[in-house]
Length: 267
Image (cartoon, rainbow, N blue to C red; front, side):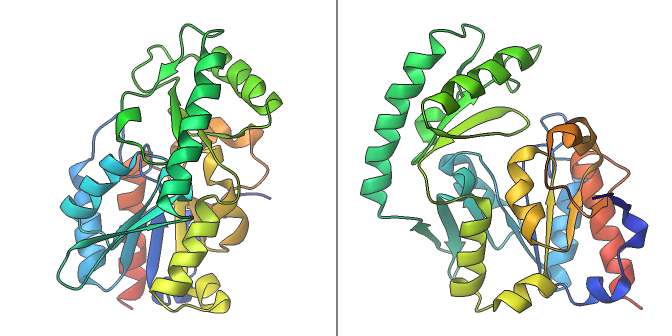
């Protein structure tokens, strides 16, 4: 499927939007920072009635901070394992894909398997935020590992897959999690149960923004999908691609998208 320029996103589609779901690292951020343009975009979207929910492979501890500190409606964290929502008085709630105790036990098993494999790849290491994860295991290949260990990442993915583990690569980590869920399955549950959207309404009122192969489950199922410009480096290995693409990378691209949507909604 060819990717269209953002300018081809229809005004009627922009006017019907109620939700933007978005990856975080290298989609809302850029070069490890949250640009001021991104924060402004999140604020203005909220003021105009568009709810933004980050959907990230990042750890629950990081996502708790995002939910508390940024103008978002909640966070789907650890690749779909948990939804951190907000009550009307801004208290946080945690909804896990399965019972929390079951997912914590599964995480311990996965961590044991991953540590055995990492012995083969000395440049790779557990992500520094592993201690703040509640359900999955993250391997750093491009966050604090510089230069990025791309060859080792690819070989590690093969080794983990050969063990039958559920693995996905983001722009900075390899994420290893239990079976049965991904970003889309939790997003669909949240949109249905927390916000009351039917499947048809989800197709018409939700737009997804991402930058990497671990966003493919979202690109495959949301007709309104956008890749920020830095997705270009991953397109050759992706089966499911976004429908539209920004001209700017990361959070600058997200701000570009927000500006486009808000201008279209003003007419």
